[in-house]
Image (cartoon, rainbow, N blue to C red; front, side, top):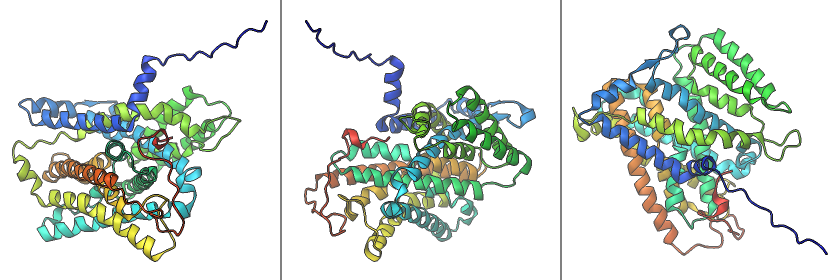
Length: 430
């Protein structure tokens, strides 16, 4: 008599696994950022604001290595390196095996990202000249950035039912936006370069590449080496977050040594929860604590630099993304992905105006910490991000309610075959 086949048992996820899955949800990442920024803003404007300032300025680290940094600096230089490492992993995969692999398919969102950075920068400078506050011109790059986590969270909540191609467009745009922002930080916000530590960092990166492509990955060796690379890049004068991106780029994105998953995915599964659950919220907590007690909200946001940032992020980003896309699809052979049309890119343009994390970082690099411009710039980034997110949410719901979708939304002469929508399993990131 044959024995009936036993049903395979599935081990229930552990508490840590459930927490990791929750933290890596797009909606969770945005929520944690908002909570951290709100907590900092409330504390910095409460009767106990001196305690917040004291905490942010607390210095720890070895002075001999020039690592005697404040907690706020550790969050910006250290923890954000983890975030940029994850960004580097995403970029590597997208360029080698993802949506950026095919220039024709990725051409529109890539060029839209360029337009979405150039127009806000130009608009920022124009507004400053009109207001006469040209002393803040160094902050031109502040409104060029897009916050991936925040923007995707808003899209995940309010874009349910829309074609998943819209999410791919936004993700591609935001990833390229981050890459360009990293280049801007490295080129325009590096005062001087110490070539000896930079050269040693390059040597260490070569060793990192050898270890990360070996048949067996020795994590016990990679983590200390990564710390060494970060220290060397920080000592060179180049912003330390660049170290994270470079290491992310060195991780293989194709299958090697008979493995079933690219190593970019394996590393991302480990570090993405740390980035979303710890690095970004802690940075937001220390960066968003802007005191508005002395000048008041209107007093701070009426400054020329604040007006320029808000206009550039909310209006400039949208104009840059929409205008570039319109010109490309009308004047060149490039087309949008099947299922989406120009009307879908109004909410995408507004989502791109959520600067938040990277904009706050560039604001810190642009102006001295206690300067008037620094406080106004940070307050403007927060206000603009909230405005852009709110308008994007309304635009997404309006777009989702519109039923008059043609069979050729992207106007490429071929009928669209849309089977994936935001809110389904397939809409999640790799």
